[in-house]
Image (cartoon, rainbow over all chains, first blue to last red; front, side, top):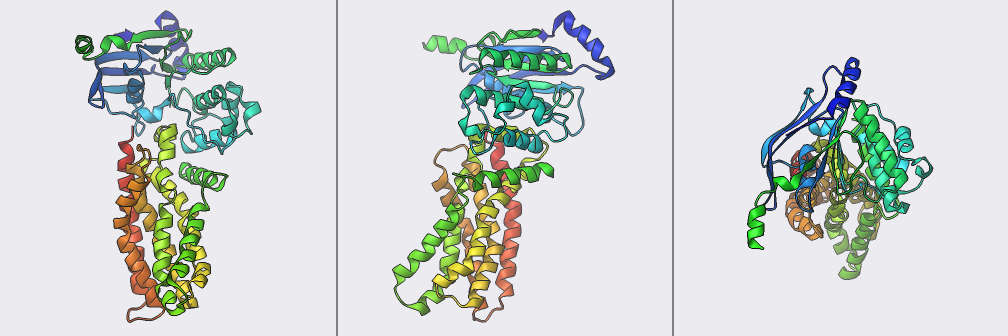
Length: 238
Length: 221
C-alpha cells in the first residue's frame, strides 16, 4: 500500500526543494505486533511521504496505539522494519519524531510554562522550537502561570499537544498522534488542524490514530481492522 | 548535559513542592531514631554503642521512601515515553533521577545525622563519622533501590517488592557503614578502611544500578 498526498503534495515538495533536498519518506515493511500473547496485526506495509499523512482507523483493541508506539520506537515490533529516509547519523526514529500519546504527561505541581520549558530542555534542546510559540499555537498563553493540577481535560490535552511546536518539522518530521482531538473543543480542533497544516506544508508528515474524522487534508486512511490476525479464529470462537 | 541538569532540576522542584514528599524520608528517619531510646530504656552506654546501627538502619529504611514513585510516576503519565524521545540516553535519565532522589533523601539524612546522634548519646567523633559515612554510603542505597524501582515501574503497589529486592543488596553497605562509625570511636581498624570500602561500594553500585535500572526501564512499554 502506497500512501501519499496526491498532486498537491508533490507541488509542495517541489516548492520546498531549496530547504529540503529530499522529501522525507517513512516506510514500514511487513510489520507484525504482538501484545500479551495476542497477535494484533501482521504483514502491514505502508509508506508515507513528507507533506502527507495517514489516518489509522479500526475498532478498539485493533492495535492503533501499538502501531504508533512501534513507529515511535517505544515498542519492539515482532517482525518487520520501520525506517525514515533520508537517514541521519546518530538520530533514530524516536529522536526524529514527536509522539503524542493518549496520556497527558503533565505534572500537577508545575505550571504550564515550567512544564513546557522542562520538556524543551530535557527533550527538544536546540531544535528550533520555543515555549512561547508552543503556548501561542494552542492558545495557552493565559494559562502559562497556572499549575497543571488546575487544568480541565481539554486544557491538559492542549498542553500535551503543545510539545509539537517545541521542535520543528526539519528536526522531527514525523508526528505520531494518538486520538489527538479527544476532549478538544471546536476552537482547539481548528488550532490543531492549523498546526498540522503548517507541519505538512513544511514537508513533515502525520500518522494519527482516530475514531472521529479529523478533517485534515492530505491524509490517507489505513483501516487496521483489515490487518488483524486471528480475526477468523475469534469469529469462530464466538 | 543541559537535558540532564533540566531533569535533575525538574525532579527537585517536583519533590520540594507540596505533595512532593522531600521531607518524608527525613521525618521517617527522625521517627526511627526517636523510637529506639524508648524501646531500649535509659541505658545511655548501650544506646551510644548501638547508635551507628540505628542511624544506618534508619537511613536504609528511609531511602526506600519515595523509591516506588522514582520511575513509576513518569511511566504512568507518559513522561518516560517523552524522555525516551530526547537525546539523553536512558542511563542518563536514570542517573539524573537518582541524583535528584539522593539530594532530597540521602543528603538530608547525612546532614541531619549529627543532630540525631545527640538523641542517641553519641560522642562528637561518632557523630562526625556517622555523617561522613552516610554521605559516602547513601548514594549506593539510592542506586540499588533504583534497579528495583525500574523493575517495578509498571506495577501498582510495587513498593514492597522494591524493599524485598533491594534490602538484601543493601547489606554490604550497612555493614561497612556501621563499621566506619565504630572504627571512629575505638576498635582496632582505622576509620579510613571501612570508609574506603563504602566509597568503592557506592562507585560499583553507581555503575550496576544505572545500567540495571536503564535495562529495566527499556522493558516498560
